[in-house]
Image (cartoon, rainbow, N blue to C red; front, side, top):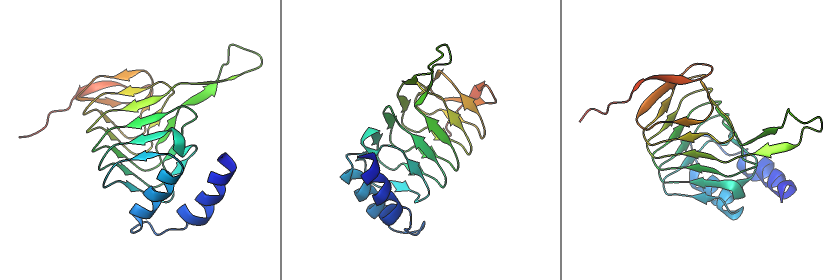
Length: 164
């Protein structure tokens, strides 16, 4: 399945113009069993390792150069932005073993979150509703709802307040 996805990605997904054919790219992903909501905009330069491990809500933007290394599932809620060159990584190697086996854990991003440019999300990360992860942050673990996280390693630097 990975080989077929790689061919389809190179021939039919990647060459499409950035400003158009969003529905076409979503259709291709759905053909590989991704669950994609309404009104999503997925840039053609986004790299998706396994569409069958991708669940995306409504009105999600996945920007230029985003890398979804989804050996384990990635769940993205509705009205979420994943900004340029972010890396969502669900797998790594067990460095406590000399054979370094692959270990993996899903990533979950709740509604109304914003993953800013160049963010790294480690395996098992949970981003709760309304969280902002600032540019270039490296996040492990759980980010509590309606908070702002920044730095390497990421730490909570504030609360996100929505103007009425």
